[in-house]
Length: 316
Image (cartoon, rainbow, N blue to C red; front, top):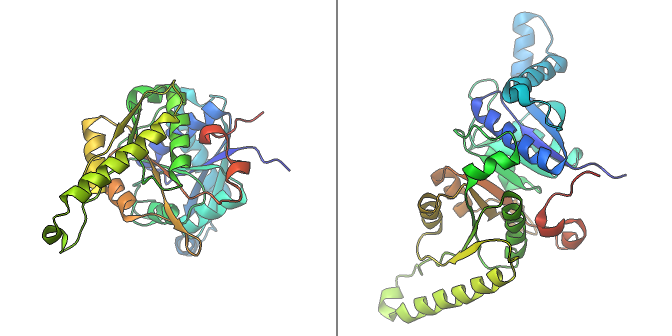
C-alpha cells in the first residue's frame, strides 16, 4: 500500500513551536504533502490532573487545543491547500515523536530547539537532542525566535543562503544532493565548505607540520571542487575551505555570509544507528539559523527510496 508523503511537526503550544509549525506548513504546501501536528502529554501529569480534578483526561480535549493552536498560528492563511491531521500521544516526548514518525511513515520532522517549560515542554537539550540522536528521518530544527513563513516562497528573503559543511566522506553526496534541491526550490545560493581542523598533537610543533597542513588544505580544496563540478549549472555555488575549529568556523560563516539554513549530516554507525556529533551539537548552540539534519541513509535503500536531489516526492 502506498502511503502519501507526510511531515510531522511536534508542538508544545509555545511561540517557538508556532514558528516550527509555519515552516512545516510551508514545506507541506510546496510539496503537496500531509502535515501531522502532534503534541505529547506527560503520563504522570495527566494522572495527577485526573486525581486533582476528578475528571479523566481525554485526548479529544487536547486535539481541540491543537486545532485552536493551528488556527491561531495560520490565521486567515489556514486554508493553504495543506491537509492537516492531529495526533496526541502520552509518554516521553522524544520516544513518542520517533514512534509516530515511524508508525505513520513520516518523511520529515520539523521541530523547534526550544519550547515552554511546565507540563508541556519540548526544548533543546532533551527532546530535540534525542530526536536528532535517534531519528531515521531528516529533521528541520528551527530557532525559537523565528516566527516562520506561511509559504515556502516567503522563506526566500529570510533564508538568503544555504551553508553545507561537508566532511568529504561518502555521505557528502546525499548531503549535497538535498542541499542542491533545496537551493533550486528556494532560488538561493549554496555555500559548500570543508573545515580543515588543526592537528591536535603535542608533537606537532616539534615535527614542523606546516607543510603537511598546507597539503591537507590543498587536498580538501581539490576534493571540494570535484563536488562543486557535479552541481547543476543553474545553482549558484561557492566553495570555501577555512582552517580552524569546525563549529566556530561554521558559526562565523553563518554570521558573515548571512546564512539562513545549514544542511548537516548526522553521524552514525551500524551498531548504534544515527547519532548527533559534537560539531552538530555545538552548531545548534552557537548558530541562530535553521538546521536541516540528515541521518545516514541505509545503503540498501539509498537509490530505491530517495527522490531526485533528495526532494520529497509530491503527492499525485
